[in-house]
Image (tube, rainbow, N blue to C red; front, side, top):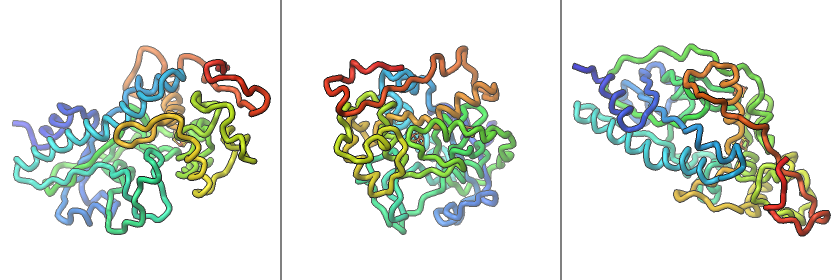
Length: 326
Ligand code: SF4
Ligand code: SF4
């Protein structure tokens, strides 16, 4: 007879989960856990891999839709909610209450924060009554992985390439051991890779800066940006080279001018940077040989490409298709 823990793991795996970890409420440092469910005894974390192949299009500069739809939208809106509901139903069949917890992308308690994965105009801010788990902290507390310098949770299987959900339950289930591997060596590759310098050397993410460069404010990494972009802006060169420091207000103004590519169905911005910070991290961890999920070939096969910075006057007739990658 399988234990409840084994049944939960098996059900998550059946519905697409890759990693399942269990934390006791005593080891959870996020007070929201206790607020949401004072009777909770266990926090269950399930991680779902982002396919490495979903990043291939942006790595090659050939297709941009696939990363956001397959590695963000379909996981967040389809695969993970279904798995959550099926596992919660299993717990309820066993007589326990189960609270499914997935990220709410558009409701924030802070007044001027943002979420770079969605349109900032769609976010409801200052909603103090909305309590959400600290997803990264809960993942750490459940033993899923380690927080890298970039802020991403790194697992020994997939590095930074996963997304995750939680279940709070009053079922008492044996917790897993804390994560004991050290993956992040503070190499700084994530910081270097950001086309908008949105990560400080200490790994602090400027979320407004990130929002502008996530959707392609750097011309050298955005094949959809026309040559005349930001032509009337005195800081044009600094913007399109990723050297500008954006206030939230300035980031919003830039984002308004930056939408060359349609959002994904559920309102996610299409990522143009391809989350280069995580990709660089993955490449680094892969090169070190410390990820347990192995591939027959390395992710980065060719040198990273960059498009030229175009001045508005020197080459006004040049089209996107004429721009050469170097
Ligand atoms: S790229 Fe290097 S510094 Fe950044 S999170 Fe990964 S291992 Fe840590
Ligand atoms: S690489 Fe992209 S996701 Fe990462 S910090 Fe920079 S803009 Fe944000």
